[in-house]
Length: 409
Image (cartoon, rainbow, N blue to C red):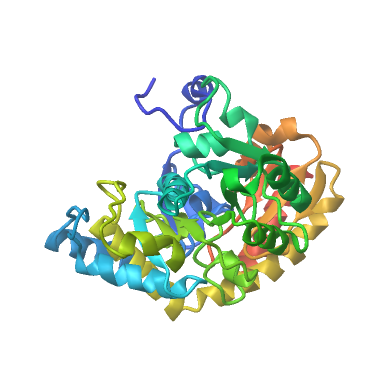
């Protein structure tokens, strides 16, 4: 029995079979410690947007670490690479003049946004606005805040009641449910609504037509902050020339949480992006926000992010994400005819889900995919996740679809 405790795992089963050791990556493929090759269906865990094996990013991190690895950015401390990265992310943000607070990852970013929502209303003289609203099927990380907001019941079980007070959950696809909650509890008591543009870990569900804009307008009309959780969708996965899904849908969120594609997973990093009016009370002077993380804005991670963005821009990978939207829809739609498949959800960026007819078959299906040369995972109730690196070619998409069909047919 090894010493490593895996996340989201039945450790008894892992101990029985042994871990699946990823030894190397190259582009949209990974290799195990026996040299076997697999198409990476999930870009790691939604994050390897530029593909594996990018030595340019490794070299940028090495140069930074050999100069100064990191220093606190509390108070007035900062690194030049961190300042440059903040400006670059702010320019990508759908709301001009946004401010950026860096974190260690997506869960940190979600907790940061929830804390800022409540603190902002306190600064506005409205401390009673405390309730944070999320949706069924939602995943917002595994810190205290994200766990409390989870719309996946299994992720909340076993911790006791009252994990985080003043949270509410509504149905994931019904904008009128949000309006009804606001009317029932009173807008004066609700701080924010947090929403994934595409539900990720909850099963890869695309938003119903018009849903995102409708809930955005409801929040605007009732003075409720709108937080777009773009940990999965941020930094190009939605394509069509937009760095964020919020841009593609014209949402103008009050806050965005992000991570994953920020560095393409080469080094851990996250960011909370705040619209100017959220930041204004804290930038006006005389007000401290006592919040931050030791490794938030790590200089090595910032160097990785800068190199990652250089690759995305130089190679036109936002356009490649758009191309993948069409490739995935064309290649995977026929799998919906298989008896083992209930439906295929696709058509929004480099994201697709193959929903199994029998959700209980998901663990076995993931192993069958591996036997056919695909590294993947299941999400929600039996949805097989497809979220490849933007560098996956059209031929590789077709190859991956054929391997899925062989594993599920």
